[in-house]
Image 1 (cartoon, rainbow, N blue to C red):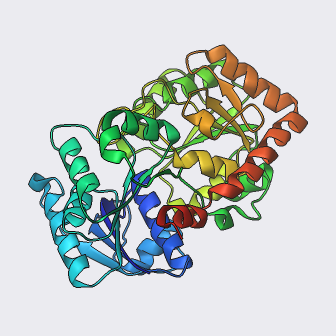
Image 2: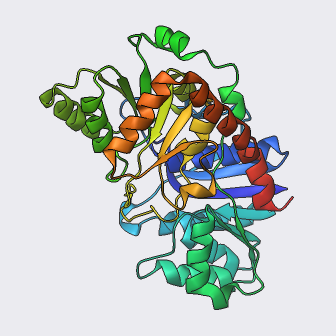
Length: 377
């Protein structure tokens, strides 16, 4: 099948949504589809990525696919990109348009062009719900994809009458298991990365509000014998938290900064424990709160890394996690997190039993399986 993946994400970018878009396109190509990605070129100041090949390497993409680069007028908030990409895709004779853009989905569906739209939150604002309804009512509607069952329920409650008889599925995010094969032991990984030898608890991702960075610093203050490795965050956020750590005398916190997606596995493997300390409200780059409906990429990467996961006990995360494959803690109860880390440090058998179960469970969440489900083939 010839698939046009229309994205309004900037690529390359440090955001999780750009990783998800690239890995979905790669998986489509691996499944034998002829996929072309329509995306906005985003220049990263700290990286010199001037070719498609360099961008593929940055994301760890092995199965190449063409990228049709778009330019965007910021004042038009992506609507110009949606219009031009849909028009170009139709002229090029694709069999299907797959998109996370409400505007692209509405334009494509209304024109009768076969369209699948993937949503990561309940449509909101003044225009979002209107565009969403247009997509649902258009003759080109093929399928609606939600990243969590919590999101499916929330959307069904609000738009139930528009969804009757429609294909509406749940497809959590995924992981490329090949990138996590044959990882070194924590000790070997720390040696390769030049990280001091100590029991290490890690975190990867953004430093936005609600991600639990403050909780991690509190834990570091309570557990001076444990090393904390934080990967990710933009330069301003990293600088701010570094200053906070210095002021609090936390010499057991290491900030690795932004690491290309292709280089993340070895950093995760350098840890005995991986933290997912989401709070009850979780901010995203564009604003809003996704705590009720999210499907974090880091969750599946943590599971693939074969390390113990200690996570906030939020309903949406229980769609994937349980007491059999992770430790689930109240996000506001620092003592429970401290106790879990201490037990992990003292009881390696217990720690690895949970880690191995998570590694087995993540087998069903590969990008290729997700593509099969989303495309219905």
